[in-house]
Image (cartoon, rainbow, N blue to C red; front, side, top):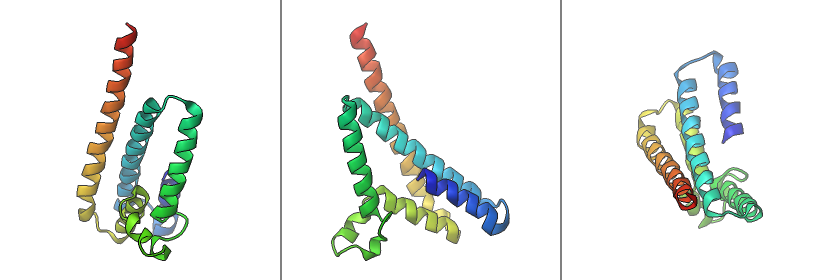
Length: 139
């Protein structure tokens, strides 16, 4: 998400010909994804305290999400059944959102972006609550 979003913003400036509305929507969309991903990973790191297990689980989960979500193989080339799973994965929604931005269909992204904000705030709040609970136990 980070590399793709950065390259997308850079490519929009170069190939589209300057700064326009789609660039700012792309940056906002990327920022929401960063909020969502970092809050989920932060909460997961609090749930799995062993670093080696956390890194192993994280690498496996990220690879599987990218593979099944259309990052390595486009989701429409996946076998029947696996292409249906792609609709439930975040990478699929990120790619769909970028496609909508490029087509100028910003209105259909508002509900998805709202869900991302709410989910990011919930995960961040749960992580802070978990940290506060640990600090309360030691005091």
